[in-house]
Length: 136
Ligand code: TYD
Image 1 (spheres, protein in one colour):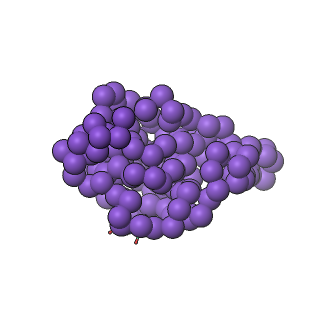
Image 2: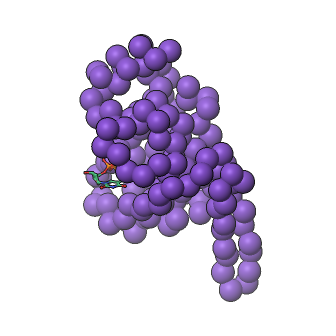
Image 3: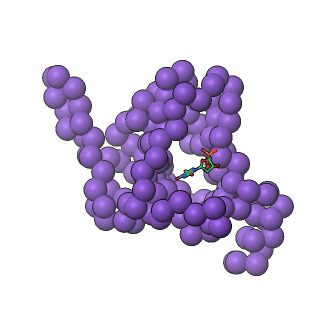
């Protein structure tokens, strides 16, 4: 459920000349990272996401700037403002997500538990609701 999704702290090494944050397999995130991708140059007012994953786990970080992530488990919705490079949002499988309110120049870094698979996506909201009903 949505309660399995949470903000996790990322190691932060503070230096006068700039900071470093480190994400490690099995330590920062509870899955093995198989893929990293990042979303950038999102035009103002645009929204992303609008789908759920059947198996994929993700860890979403605002490497720069900020954006909102709204999670929906079919029953409850919750919106997280992601705006720190040293915190990330863990998204478990079976959660519908929408990303919006991207600040100009923001970078949405996503660490994912599997390689890309189009079959893992549920892109239709009604289909998502039906999937949740059948997989309780
Ligand atoms: P999608 O996951 O729908 O983007 P978002 O959730 O940010 O709105 O992906 C957009 C397109 O990019 C889609 O057509 C498939 C492609 N894509 C890949 O080929 N590989 C990937 O790892 C990802 C994340 C997307």
